Each structure stands twice: as C-alpha cells, then as structure tokens.
Image (cartoon, rainbow, N blue to C red; front, top):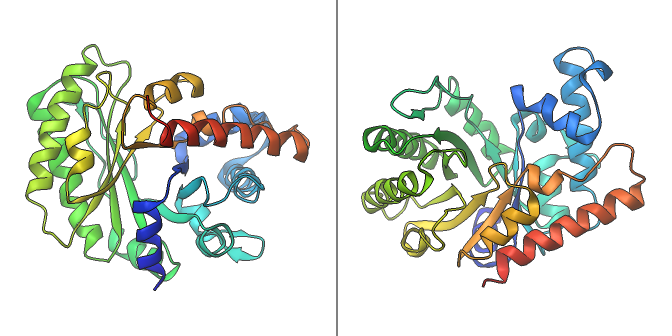
Length: 298
C-alpha cells in the first residue's frame, strides 16, 4: 500500500523535505527572487502558471529525487497540476520517490497576544478528500509566534492540534507548524514555551494519530530532542525562517534528529534566466548542502 511505503520512507530515510508551497501573497516575492518581476504577468492565473513552471523545473531536475529529497510540500494549485503528463503527487512518488504533502492553511489572523493564529479553513474536509484521492500523504499548516506569551503560545498549540485531529480522521499525517519568528525579541523563551506546549499536546494524542512537527531552528541546539523522540512524532523538520541557506544549514547541523524543510533557502540561487545545465547544477548544490545538514550532525 502506497501510504505505508510513504510512511516508512518519511520515518526511516535520510534526507529532507522541499517546501514548494508558496501561495497568495508570498508568490510574487518568490517569482521576483527567481527573476520574474510583477510586470511580467497580469492577474493571478498568469502568476500561478509561472510559479507552476518554476516548480515543475525544480521537481523534474535530475538531483531532485527521493534519495535526498524525501518529501515535498505542495500548494493546492500545484497538487492539482501536472508534471510530465502526470498529476504532481503521482509524479513525485512514482517517478521521484518523493512523498507528497499539501499546505492547507489559508493564511494568518492579525497578531494578538504575541501570536498569529490561522484563519478559518473553509471546505477543509472537501480539500482533504481530494488530496487523499490524488495520493497525498500528509498536510502542513502554519501559524506564527512573535512574543514569548504563554497564553498565546498555548492557543497556537491548541489550534494546531485541533485541526491536526480533523486531518488525521482522513488518514493523512498532519505537519503542525507553529513558527517562531527569527525576529522575536526573546526567541529562546518563546521556543522553550512552545516546546512545553507541544509536549503537553503530544502526550494527549491517541496512539493512532501521529503527527509531524515543522519548527524554527532553535537558538539552543537540541532544544526539541524530547519532541523528536516522542512516540507520537514521525519526524521533526525545520523551516529556514528567513536565514540564508548557509546559515540555516549551520544551525540545523547542531540539532540532532532534525531535518530540513526549506523553501527560500532551497531556491534562493535559482533564476529563470539560467540554462538547464546552470539551473540543475545550482539546485544540486543546494540539495547536497541541505541534505548534509539534515543527516550529518555536529
């Protein structure tokens, strides 16, 4: 069964997750970094078409395989698209050995009590049913923490676990992503509070509802070691959070058992103007560096 094979690959293989899930407001910025200004397209349809072309170029590159990129997080429109004539989730798993995930959140509420909760996710059950039919393994949803507010962080954790339970009922593995901002005025304290809130939530999870966690690389190395070892956690992955790739990789390498799930840090040197040879070489260099940081610890 594909789901069981995907689970084994995610839990046992060495490597990292590629975050190819920029959506809405983050798409123009991602295209600008790739060398496509907003003047080059008109309207959402053209913008998302260009973004899909970029993602397909990444996913079909020779170095993008499940040997090092064990999973990929997709935007809904990417999940619905095709690569080499196949639905993207099928292409990733069948052709690349890369486990597909889906970003399901719809953005953030305004900050309150030091955190930004997720906006409501209308039609989530319908989206999850569609993801299951397309062969998606799991989901990802992001909320953010700016201040070390115990009550705010408790609310973040509660929301993540509540929606995670809804996702689990569809047979999907939720990635809970309560991101601590790297610009937080007291990042270490916020991270310690988050660790404790997540540990309480994990202790209350049923044995048949495992989750993954996607967390900012902590300022204190191995802060999340008990979460990584928790029997309800399949994997803990790290977001780059705005750190440049080399910096993010150095920080990640100090955290044993934590692997990358980078977006900007994976794609930061790729340009639309590159030849295929240049593009593939730059992507391979990024994949190799992130893979090493995920698997070789200091």
